[in-house]
Length: 487
Ligand SMILES: NC(=O)c1ccc[n+]([C@@H]2O[C@H](COP(=O)([O-])OP(=O)(O)OC[C@H]3O[C@@H](n4cnc5c(N)ncnc54)[C@H](OP(=O)(O)O)[C@@H]3O)[C@@H](O)[C@H]2O)c1
View 1 (cartoon, rainbow, N blue to C red):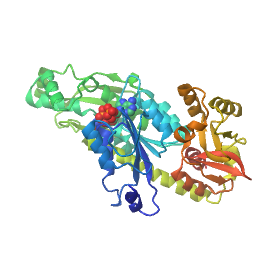
View 2: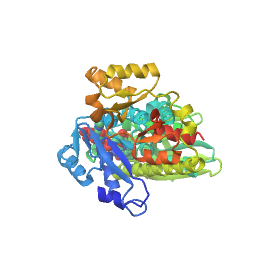
View 3: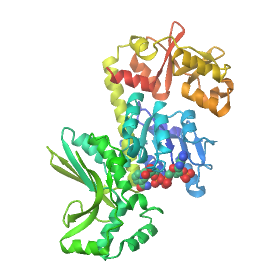
View 4: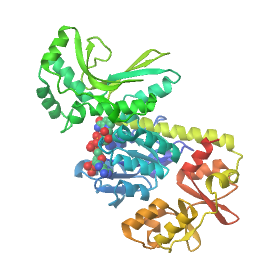
């Protein structure tokens, strides 16, 4: 992986990825990352950790991607991949592995959103950007998650969670910006569309086509999420929140699936020049998923597993977008698009913010925004209990840890509490290297310009700010981005 890093365009940062969930989509992402980037050079991303249900494999220099895929595909887990193997679950791995972007692709769960919600929230609290295709967290808690991203100063992208490869969110947010979007209607579940369009053509009954679709792998073993309309409803909720300014959850969607569509109702519709499709609609006052009769030539009457959406706007009028709503490489395409969007936005932030504030030293903002009071420090051989009491007393959430006078890193209150709960009040010392921080944190003087801070933070998640040899604060990437964008 070192050669790969060296051949990325000079001056272009390489972003460290932690992939959580290594099933169909997670592996698709790795395959996509092995292809050249937009400039024909290796992708500016490096996979430093992968977590599945068996644990986590880590290599801070970048995992060997072909070996990683072979291990998962041959043995069902990542234990044969090269790298350090740990029993860490997603949450533990997030706290122990340094990364820039977390790719969360565990299964969608619309009952409680887990484990996705925990992974996404913890990643953002730790200052990591998040890219995901997981619908569950957003179907249930879109607004909370978006607010946490904002508070944490991180980027959150979820393009792959709505209609797979079809870039509907980007279409509305970017190309149609300035339009008033009155409604989005479409086919948002490929499995239902396959079943309905096949019933229409062959005259077969629902149950027979469903059984065949399961054999062909078009539906899940338990197809209820799809055929009862919940998968389409989850996507509708994401669109409603992301591009229609409607803060709804899945409980606000009127949902009817396709179980009651019969060969007879299909035939009767056909006689009237109509076809039946499962249509999801979001407008100012409608949020519903139900089987709808459409004119045979309608743009929404697509065949097979395709997805389609019509976006109704005031300036551009109707725009129709069609494509594949699922599939390994199709969804990986959406995730790759989001990864590059994060890369571009970070570059724009540091250019814009940096240019505006290039002359401004950290000292100009540090006292008010970063370190309101002198930050306490703690020795590595202090107890965890003492660390947490100190944090509570001082009202701080990060504490620099010193070992023999050298700052070896920082520990967050959340980590301290978790460690206390997990292991009892052990000394920090034994935990410092493995659980808390890794190599010593770089120190920057309070007069360092923000652009220089941004450069150091590109490779590290935090830096220590010192003035006259006193530690006066800690700046994390999230802090810096907040400061720059608040300008
Ligand atoms: N497949 C598609 O075409 C598609 C399209 C759009 C969106 N999506 C969304 O993308 C996500 C991933 O889909 P997929 O098809 O890749 O699912 P999948 O094949 O079932 O893979 C899920 C992965 O998550 C891992 N996992 C499960 N629970 C975990 C936990 N608690 N901690 C860590 N890892 C855990 C599994 O580990 P093991 O391997 O050890 O079992 C597996 O590697 C889902 O949210 C899905 O809705 C999928």
